[in-house]
Length: 81
Length: 415
Image 1 (spheres, rainbow over the protein chains, first blue to last red):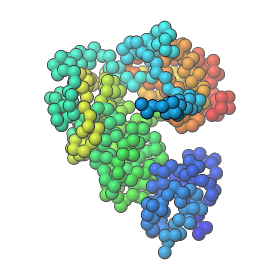
Image 2 (cartoon, chains in turn orange, cyan):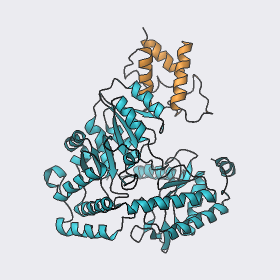
Image 3 (cartoon, rainbow over the protein chains, first blue to last red):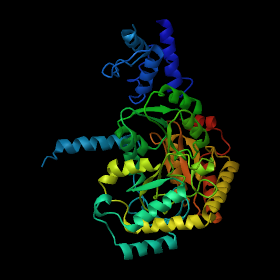
């Protein structure tokens, strides 16, 4: 679980942060905080699906469910067998 | 009437918010033809002022070229004013097909379809050629019209960091299972003036079986040794699957655009692209003008060569004066000021000195990246550029930014 948190955090930092000084924690609001826009959620969803060999239905991949690393990890775990 | 006081107050409130944010756009009225020397009424109602235009997309100085004007007159006289029809009903003349052939030859592609504007070309092309099984992977700094086209298409959309080839490759791997992949970029990026690395992008697209789309609006006519565009500069002519470009900038500057590329993709646009199907195409008078523009450019590289020399002079002058510029070698030369208010004050002071150049700030450019975007033209003579340089130096001294680094300017004016 902790390992997954770090993998997702690292991906989000690498993918979306432009400013190297910006700090991102497991609970930083990603969508509502303006770090990830709804367009960019697509690549995050695909990354998670490929990495963890899962399929997240579109109706579950909501902005709320993707709004922090902690929430994303919770969502991924719902689909992990 | 449903336009009640309540409705009016909602819009007035929104417009007030735009004013308060300092991003309310105002037009300046030009009372002359588009050229290096123009006469401007600004603010509205004031007397006319003669200024040097440093912010037009008139890269080749063809907007008011006598041969182009003559050709436009001939088009008007022989083919009339309007078509009163979309292309596929009764809105296609021989000169429209002639222009499509000339553009195909000029860009080195397989076929071309005209659109009312490049905005329309970008808005229509992706929806016409892609389905929900496909993916579009775009540079994060592509033009707003491409973003609109992407939004209208049913395919998945992803982005890569600006000009970051490693990131693009990661994305091509991530979406390897998609039916069709198209990588999307501007040839020359309009705000920064840098060019897309089309040689590397083309190689990546070949490796991962992706199509390559390039918007050449700020390139066609002058980038590359014979002005064919960014694909000529990077030695990949014939390898770009879709090119969109405009006739509203270097190529005469009137209006109109096109999609040029693989013949099947062009045919798909002819069958399915909504701005082509549901709007008149370019008016005959403009088509005649652009046909002549392409004749001029195919005969001689004189104008793009002059533009290259002018650009070198301008970049060198500003650099030696101590301005911070964005790196690049295109006629788009951004003078970095970082602070939004400074960019507006600087532009105003330049105008007082007889130089017309506009300050850009967030949201047009990223936060803290405010600038004066200067654009060089083959219509400029060295005396224009010398006068403009003199004014830039005078205003630069006034604001005490010459020889200062980015950090020093930010420390003085804020970000």
